[in-house]
Length: 176
Ligand code: INI
Image (tube, rainbow, N blue to C red):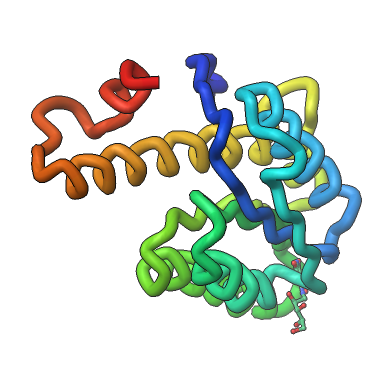
């Protein structure tokens, strides 16, 4: 899959990042690319909150709590669940994905799924490689896109006008 290259202007948006410590080599790399992705699009360091949790299983509660604070435009979840010889993988990956989706619905704030679920450690390392396709950077782009869409919808709600074309993303970009 090719990385997306569009330019975004994310100055003024505030983001939370929840990152699992389990498989730290991989998740540190996801975090670093995610932070790069945000700051390259104009997000200030002061507008990014990073919270570490033990493993992917713990991500949903913290993501939901952060999303509900009202101070963030989106929350990004980063983790790496790698298949072992037991059904542990299935329980953790299913609970992480279900809980992350639920956190977005409960809070009304975009919560981005940047959790790798791979069969091997090699696959996880490939997907966290900062020199090629890194899922952390992709998660940053998705968070900016979703924050932009949500802001456009909210702005239109305030003015009473409706979104007339696209998904709000192109229009919100034109406004800034
Ligand atoms: N947590 C992960 O983030 N990735 C894994 O691959 C993993 N495995 O394989 O066990 C993992 N386990 C820990 C889990 O997320 C919880 O932290 C733990 O069960 C305590 O609740």
